[in-house]
Every structure is written in C-alpha cells, then in structure tokens.
Image (cartoon, helix red, strand yellow):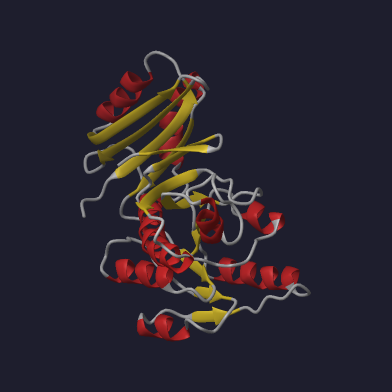
Length: 289
C-alpha cells in the first residue's frame, strides 16, 4: 500500500478553508490524493479529510509528536479555529478485542485481519468466558479470561485496564462483549471503543432487541456499530445495515439473519476507524468512503 498522510480537520465553517489547506499541502511539496469535505449547516461546522502523498513533503512527519508539522500548520489552525489530527497510512494501530461467548464477530474480525483487510495489530483478546480460546489459538493471538461478577466488576475492569495499558492499545472493539462498561472505564477511552449493537439504533436499545423486533412485527431488522459513550447504545453511529424479514420468520430466524449483519457492520466500522475515515462532531460522524 502506498504510504500517505491523512489530515482530518473540523472547525467553524468559513470561506477559504479548502483553498488554504490545499495551498499548504502544495507549498510544502505534498500531492493531494483524495480530498473530502462536509459543511454542516445546522451546527455551522466544517469537516475535511485530506489524504496526500508525503514523498516530497518538506516538513518532517517522522517525529511522533509532529513538532515540525505543528509549527508550520498552527497559524492556519489558529486562524480558522481548527481542531486537527494528522495520521499516516503506514501506522498500524493496536486493537484489543473484548468478547463474551458469541463468536461470529470475533471470527470475522480475525479472518479479515489475517487476510490483510484490517491493517492493524491485535496484541490480545480479552473475554469474560473461556469459550473462544480455541479460536484465538487458531489465529495465534493471546487470549486472557477476566471473569466478571456483580461483586468484582470494579476490580475486573481495573485488570482489563491494566492489560490495555500493558499492550499499548490504540482502541478497543467490543465484539459482542456482553457486559455494560462503567462510566469510569468508558471515559478513559473517549472515541476509542467501538461496539456492535444488534439492532438498527435508535430502535430496540438494550437487551434482547431481536425479541423486541419480533414482538413489534417489524419488516426490517438491522445492526449498528457505534462509538461507546456513557449513555447505553447512544454513541456516534459509524455504520448500519438492514435485512428484510417476514411474518414467517421466528425469533431464531431473526437472530440468524442479524448475526450475518452484525459481523459485516462491525468489520466495516473497524476498517474505517483504522483507515482514519471517520470524523466526529457532536454525537454524529462523517464517514469518508
């Protein structure tokens, strides 16, 4: 894959922002490969993703803290009140997967990772059950069980946090991890926890959404991948998809069809996060395809 630099920007919408950013990349020897922007009229916010070839770029991008880039780009950022982040496609973020007993999302992620579709590293899988040990062994990824009960949840979360820090994770994926994370835990990793919920949010939040959908007699069921926030199943939505169901379908049919959706929707969301295609604003996202 060709190495590229990716600049993600959000700021109040104003004239000249696209031209200024394009001119900055050009003046410093960069060649723009892709540029996508969105102006949100309701919030007055401008969002932009610029991917450029840094081969002839005259600003040092090898420094982890981006001191040189920050020095040159700061005058523009200050002028337009920009929040910005620079990423590089060659960087492989470290993803830790949390899973319970259901294995379909886990298997899909691990297969896509092995095939090269997900350009990230998986240092460890954490579970509150031993059931998926054999799957982790097959893919040669360490698997750790952290048992959780109603009495030991704070201690268990501290152990998980310790594992996350030890393995220097960049983000977490809840691959049908059937535990509600505490607010304290969630707040340690803002915009760094991706979840899959087995319904088309905001419909049927919480537990047993397929049963809720069956009782309601819906004609479509869905799956939603989103960033985790303090409010259950209410974080910024990254990806959704649906499948048609009929009056002949049982709850088990809905669950079977839903699982096919869940794994695809979650893997898409993870890939877009890894590829720095997501810009967040408020409780929404812009996803650049």
